[in-house]
Amino acid sequence: LFAQECQFVAGAATLDMLPELPLNEVAFSGRSNVGKSSLINALTNRNTLARTSNTPGRTQQINFFDLGGRLYLVDLPGHGYAKASKEKISAWTDLVNTYLKGRAKLRRVCLLVDARHGLKVTDREVMDMLDVNAVNYQIILTKVDKTNQSDLKSVLKKIEQELAKRPAAHPEVFMTSSAKGIGIEALRAELASLA
Ligand code: GDP
Image (cartoon, rainbow, N blue to C red; front, side, top):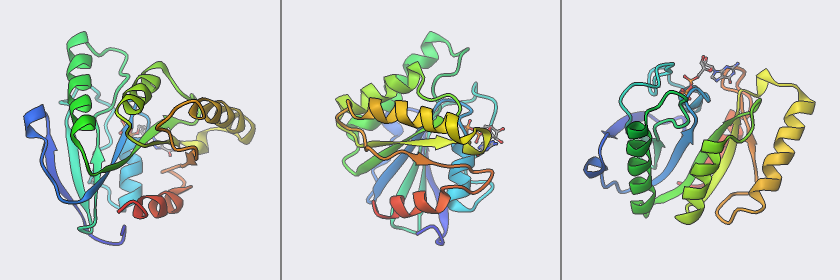
């Protein structure tokens, strides 16, 4: 799947722009700066697909990428940016909520969480949205190269305990590092099983 061409299909900045597409979808969500662009680029072997960006102020939009004509990878706008205005947060919530409610072919949301920080308030808000909409989701820890084994273990344990209480959560947590190539192949295999 990931050896195939990966192409940008469409971007949607407003609710009426969300395209109807024929393939299954896997979406990626996470706080600004969590490493979402880096992970998408590592998964797809591309450097330019999703732009790494430290400018959370840019236009929020949902981007659709085609993986070999078999699966869409959907890049959701980042959340949890400290300086985001009320209007911006509400625009984000509207866009993502509409997306989550209307996607019959959405197989899973990968919720990216920084391995050093664990779950934050806005992550739990996203998990609430996913549980309410019965959208299957999975936690992907990012930047595991920046933490040590014992810290990682305790972050992981906490998250697993929390996931056990949530109806739409996938119990398995993936651990990744885009920088070091850790966990990338395992995540590819998981995503390929959803096509
Ligand atoms: P996004 O805002 O979620 O798309 O995050 P980016 O992919 O732009 O990454 C944010 C910052 O974290 C950048 O400075 C990246 O170089 C860095 N980063 C991303 N992934 C990793 C990783 O696996 N390990 C390390 N050490 N840094 C990472």
